[in-house]
Length: 129
Image 1 (spheres, rainbow, N blue to C red):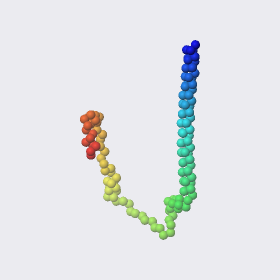
Image 2: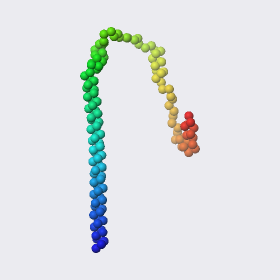
Image 3: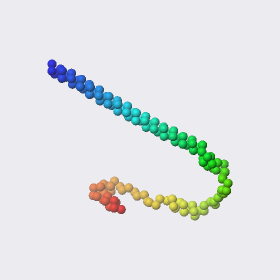
Image 4: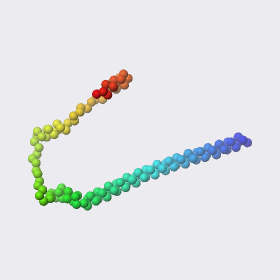
């Protein structure tokens, strides 16, 4: 009779533990979903704020002035337009030489070189430079 009572108690205890684990998993999933929704809401709020700021900028006199200058070619009184001649070939070549990367790309060492450096400590030379 004692074995039956112990067996029933173990079954009840296992059922309770299984239910507790299931409830914790459900709570974890719900919390994860809540966090995701909260992040999405924050993102939407930030996007809304950015659009409100953008709308206020488009209504400002600064934007109206800049767009009148850009699209209508208007200017403030006293301003003068400066028209520069096109660049010469020498200037274009100088620009391309300045835009070249200063550092040459090093080829990565081969797999065998990497292993020998790793096994025999060859990497310390590269760290000093």
